[in-house]
Image (cartoon, rainbow, N blue to C red; front, side, top):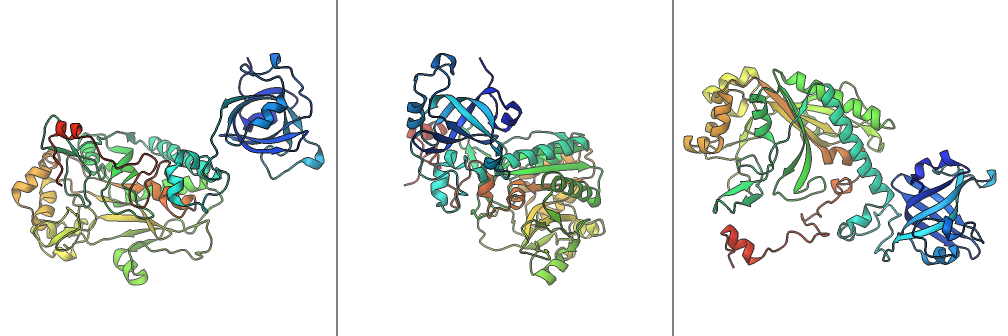
Length: 487
């Protein structure tokens, strides 16, 4: 039996009989001859059924059921899944299409076997898809993923992740997985919580980020960690935000702010130059702005510094540094669990350290509004694509942060006792950074929102329209968990 040949490799088999498998992308019946565009994950090729079948069924593909190739060719429709035996021929010079993949060859179809029929799709999968309502696309996402733009987005997502993994591994980082069922602690957004059946009345939380675990890995002595982490935040959706998302997460021991920024700037430059050579980075090394400079000049802390905002291939990276550590806490709240009773909350996260010259103020709880954190954001074309900081690596420093926020000693111990014990165990100085990977891919692929680069995205209301979730669960499930719903 012949081995299947991928469509991208057909030009290597001119004059040979081959078998391809995939989808019918286009069908054009001209009576005596039937033309097809066949498609697999590697590309497309034109095929033609000539007026008379060239090969009897006995020499065709196993499973062939019709001696009349034209009968099968007339029956099949777009998006049907087929196996095709054919001869790879060079096109005449006048018929060559130089701007198309396989534009210089054609597959003379000798046999077709239908592997699966397809209902008429609710929309055209060959278009860009932007003319179709997003909710309809998300409901039939498995069809939407077939369109060339989405295939390119997801394949480039894979290539980018592969580059990132290889880069950090070569830089001496270890990929370490952290739990997706953890403890609910104040980190800035609402937690998704998971009820425990065995410990009724108690709950796990899905991680908003691996923040505490990544620091505990530093306590464990690995020195350089990275992870492609799934994160979960119960917050309102928008174009560059989803209830669950992917984060490229790193942490490093025995470093200062410059070390963390340097390795990640190197990553971004190499990634763009390797995978997106058509794009231009506006300035290398990346410019740096203090938080105060960004606010005064641009009115926000994620400035779009492109010199030509009409150039879709211009990438203007910049670092924003020297953030205030604390800001006045809003009263009432919106699900933000970061605030205590002290009138102050953190601007990034509570685990950051102040810049060294402000450590005395933190320990003395003086000049709170003027303390500058050792925190940094990486911004691209007006979007914050990542952020991080040097951490408090002593229990005294971390405890002072929560005291300033008004946490009582018992609450500090209940929520963060494990962290304080770890920091007291001989944890080295450390710091890190996390990239919002979906947001980075959105910008690299020139897409308007992150849903276009996520294989199975939620809609703007955080719903999975394809799986119809969130959904109700049975009373039996609720009883097992000891949960009763209020009417």
